Length: 341
Image (cartoon, rainbow, N blue to C red; front, side):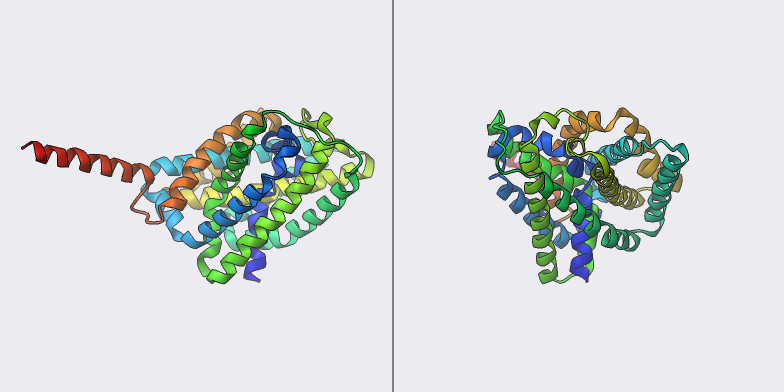
């Protein structure tokens, strides 16, 4: 059960509105055309290795955040950007004719955010255990219905940048979920960690492959707010709308936990923690889902890459890339000073 809980929670971190709506996949994969598909092997390897590493480092991630205000801020900014996109997606999706129904859904989302904020990882695991398998199943079924192997694939452009964007995609998703994923590994064996990492990476890459194929056959939807959603009509569109709603909020709930858990290590002001975890992303979400994904996600990707590089390569929490670099520099200067005497 530990492995299953971990898989659903890890997939829930990545399986947000940017992924499930297709907007994120257009920016990082589909626009490079059919040549982006082989690079999914790189994405699989990066997901697997990073999941496994994060599950292994455990408390070191939290300790590292406490020791470095710089990396705490990097993680916080990336997480807030991601959470803001989820709230922006909610505004696009919760647009029914009945105003009371719209208000009720938003109210429920806020209540669940508050419960995750208060109750933590156990409550989040239970939510993901029920929501993720259901949404994944319907997502895959609907996408399969859209695949037509007689249709040509989009050729793409700037294909040399595809591997770079693939790496940034992994960094974007995992930097924001690093604290949550690391906390999952506390009570797991090495074998369970390896199993959870492999299954999570495999599930994500299979669904990624399916979604990208659908997008490559329908490049006319690239410029829309939610490319995959725009392919559906009638009842299927309503079902897909709810799938995206579930997907974006499983990620939102994970981010609420990550932000609040990280901040509690440095701050005792509950109002500030609550405002940063929920209220601030909600307000930034007014910039719009498309704007945040197109313009703020690349920033979050770069910040995420720096954060992951420091966390993964420097397991000892007393060290960081920059600190060790400057220490080596200082030693060289000091030793040269001795020689001149």
